[in-house]
Length: 83
Image (tube, rainbow, N blue to C red; front, side, top):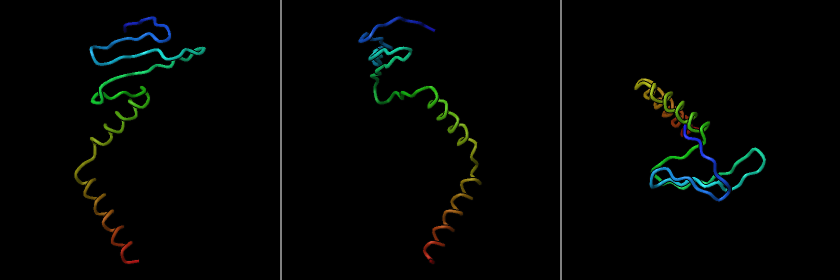
């Protein structure tokens, strides 16, 4: 891990496209601004971990699971139409 010291309004470059700027420092909290191209996802680590967990969960869905979910949805829609 590269560790750098920066002061408020100083920037770190990652490659040619990503800029990380120290926006504010208050006590033990640092606010950073991130400029990156739209094709690069930027998430807090806990959000990234949650997305990865959901992706792993979704990758384990079988065609039978999908067929069952569709059949249930169709039954529910037909039931609503009758009432």
